[in-house]
Image (cartoon, rainbow, N blue to C red; front, side, top):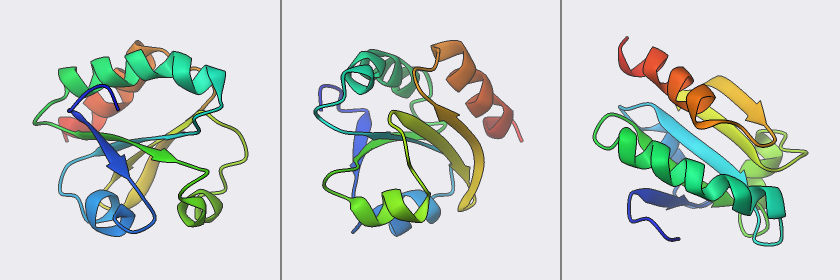
Length: 111
């Protein structure tokens, strides 16, 4: 991953890093071969930078971590899910703007 602010989530660390987080968590479900996923990467990195210290931002490779993808019914990628207190708060499917992602995170950060 290009940015050190974007964490790598896996089947093994998802429960502790995402569901157990005290901060809101943005999770980008992606795959190496997915061109729209690659196009979304700079946006995810910008959001990670903007929310550094306020929210956790990471990516989970659906090819390597299938259990989480199945559990959250990921049928198309990229899909971005925002979690707070272990619960799904917002879900975006397809290319999503930085404004939409930041807006959804801002709602959760300020609460």
